[in-house]
Image (tube, rainbow, N blue to C red; front, side, top):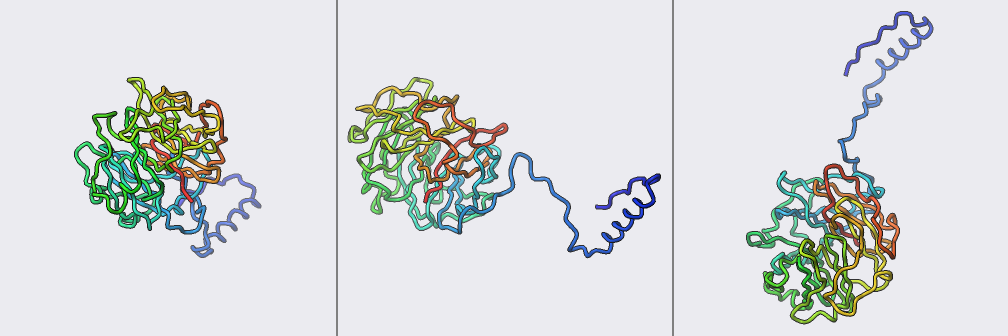
Length: 349
């Protein structure tokens, strides 16, 4: 770009001679050696950070409410500092937004659980691999959804002894690993939506764990999974204006990361969250928040991935969030503007 030279009338002759010499030297310099003009970054989004790890076969899977899904190698998501802006991820139309985030290896089979309690399996490698910011494909190619049905959990295949499902109204159902294995009939149903509403989350368990269920109001209950009846049990008693958000398998050494829709999160140490003897009790405050968006079991060596409704995603180290044994309000984990956090997961090993 050519810039108009300012009026140099009255400038000291020696200074003027120096300026003219610099102009002549710049004009004579090869174009390849000239420093490019700085370009301002896109508003509200940081430049992609440097890679935080060598290339890996682990993939970040992003899924939208409308069923658009994509996978991207995890190493393309560099670490940022907690409370950063993040970078844009899944490209979606204005009437759609992300709803689910997970990390799976491309060599694994994915176990998809739907809101109607149906289960499907498909190879992760069949999902087209894309760049970080890219469009997805409809998940109905692998999971034939019914009207109003959506995928609520994507789990690694055969990663425990039981799969625990939780419904919107807090109903819990356990499913043996053999029932969702390679011989499973695609679309097999493991929950009746008439009993507790649609499924909203699922996790693998060892068969001997405690189950931790949290709600939109930031309440939670913990109880032994062995106390869940074979036909299902009410896991947490909810008020009419509340709903379950997620479920995780825990023990006294576990850490649970709780994410508020405002982008604030907290690490709750389970040693400070006593378990009930039986399922079905009312919840205790786990995080002071206007609305809980999600939860995930985490270790101190994990990275966390958070995605917002506008598809901004951030990766940071879990150790940046100090673990607490008591009730807290959380610390800023992702910077949001006219946006809200919608899902969280660990980056895995």
